[in-house]
Length: 293
Image (cartoon, rainbow, N blue to C red; front, side, top):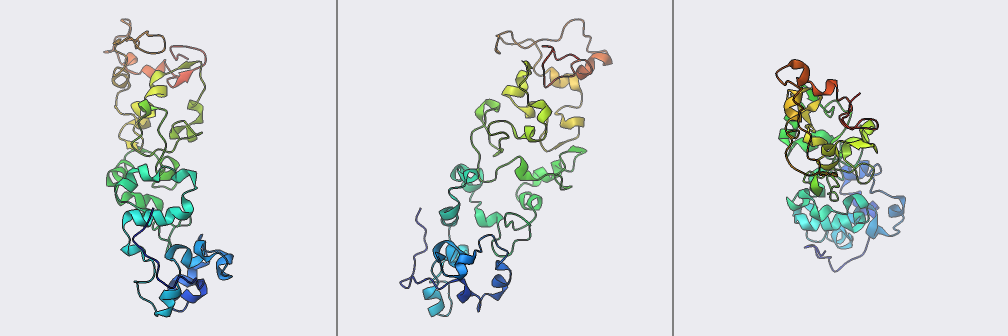
């Protein structure tokens, strides 16, 4: 993709050392930067390493004693141009294969919106801020969910947003009818990201709970946080189960419909309002089709 930046007539590469005199605040820490390589100091392939790897040849810039007209300045590029420059090197990375289909890219959130190439404060990925705080800048609603009584421990640092999400865009999901609007990062290549940690729920299982395989974990659980125990969508278990188990429909692998609650179960009795007291293998079982103990 062509960018709006036009290389000046003097396309000579001068090497990163020439930048030191005018940009000492960048140079002093650039040796710790992932974009710094020793070959840049030797002027070997400067088009892909060091300062000129991103900003373009600096011959005209140095000859004119600075100025923004003859060097690539990212603050003057459009979002599409910024993305194109970064992909000159990063396009081969599989996690970025869907970056143009990403909701971030489509909303003009580009690489420099999240990454600070010169002054990163994070230990990894050259992030402009700590990852959670960076995501909260736009996703304020998610911040409040992580403050709920039952939640994933993101604020405590036990996990990060990118453990479940790929901010650069993800492939089509194999769960939830193939829709994936939250850029979830599949675990084990094709499975829900929840299974990265909850491996005991993965299977394969002889008797699967259809909602787990088809709709996914979020059919019953909130992903970020909930006021209910175990991140459930409803405070009372049987009301959650009855969303599906009403006997309606003739679908499923055996077209046997969804099992309805038997008449022997009086749902006014608290004993029968706690379905998982008996149906303990609710995510799937190797021994009982009713997920009993």
